[in-house]
Length: 242
Image (cartoon, rainbow, N blue to C red):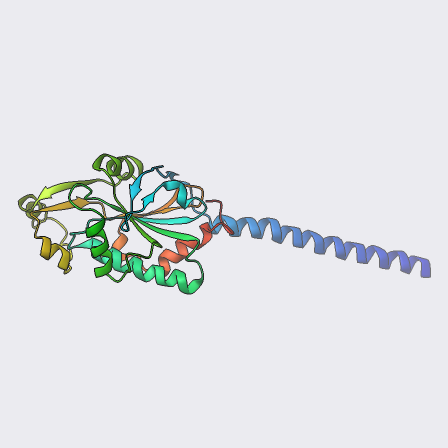
């Protein structure tokens, strides 16, 4: 009788242990797999490679410098009086949020100048300063180059269209059937008083640490800092495939 009880007890313990191990394996596999699936973003393509571009400080920048980092990529016109100032101000706030979260070294904010023929580092520095960023702080990289270089990266690589338009053509584009655009004060534009505008997509692209495009925001000016951080965090090297 005692022997039977002993055997029954051992079998019961083994059964319980086997069930517990199975449950833990299931949680790890299914729960972990579901969690990874829930937080991972699809690969939408490969971000363009480039070399020899210039940032707002005059330093030469290559795309290889951002390897291992998540990139928040946008496209700005220094004389813009609509969406660009709003996007720049939002990204300055996002940089401060990254710093407070201890993630500033893992994420790069990269902007491309969509007016490389008419503006350069001087105007780019002034633009960043107007909307709250110290141009000497290279955590925010504003890049320019020869028109052909920028066209290759922006149009061919990120598929963001842009074109130079005269004031009259721009006014026609903003006719009664067009969605009204915000008017933002830009002292740099007022001082330059140029007779053209750069019409371009209001987009923002998230690039993973291995150079894959992972998310595209069509309206960059309305993306909140916390929404942006939520998109970036799963792609960080410790928690995403890039």
